[in-house]
Length: 427
Image (cartoon, rainbow, N blue to C red):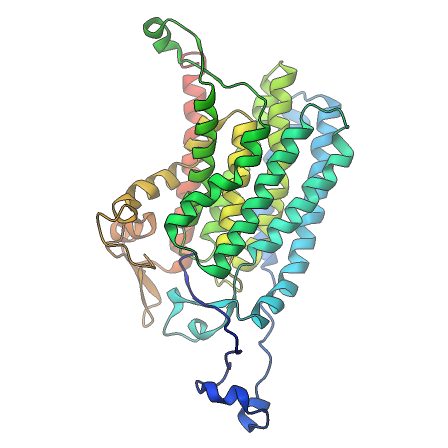
């Protein structure tokens, strides 16, 4: 997260209405007796969610009408969607509860992009991605009862994927609490991906693009352990790319929602167009994990959209990135996933000079906020956020986030167009 200034709890609770630390040891101080508990967070933005729910119409149209999907497979997808919907409402209900607990532990921050305004002085509860991660795992585990048998070939890899997501969520929360250096953050996804890498029993081959076959002489290349190394690097990239493409209310969750929706559409299209049962199961496996991710992320977005009443923390960005990485790996569409991540790739390339130390890198690479106009102005920091501001001019935080999410959607549409144009020629 780059949009807040984090405060960490100390051994002595910090006074909320006075800057004098000695007042914490005076129980009879009138000023301390007048302290009131933090106000509850703003309610979820139901109107905003209602507009987003319209995007579910094309998805269910593809499932029920456009493609002829096996009834048993369709039944599993709908059961998973029902459990995901339940997870959505549980997440909406639990976020205010968790907010009270993290505020008690002084795990909150101030929104830097609102500094100098009344909203900039409001305590915003931090690390609410932990709620999304827990509800997601519960939904994904309960779904096993309806879909997998004890001898299912997919059960081992499914549980290995959940172990990676659980591990990454835990490490993300540790990062939120301990605020570990960014160099350590690069290593964390590698550790969290170990369960999947060890349990992976799928193929380690790649299909050579048709234009290169005459030059290489083979159509399929077995990469062996290099393929698993690639899987680990993909997990590192996905988790950290979501984490550094941040800094605006709703941007982290918003980009996840856009990408997961594109993944769902891609999976349904591949299931409907394929006749290979194993290929269909691989994409169905992806759907079983992405639907709960989308549902719980939408619940979080209802609180995190501008003006944000909660911060998602590194817990959420790591959790979301790892989940999308494992579905891309086990669904065997990692190339497509990387094109969906095109804005994140561009943001990484823009950030590389600062991340590598070639150019000094400040702690918060955020745009400048003008409290008089309420607009953000781009700085020279190498982020896609600042790049947009430098080229489009000053924007409000909300409109800038919408521009970036539209660009994310365009990148996903470009991926579908590219697959359509290259179908039958590239592979």
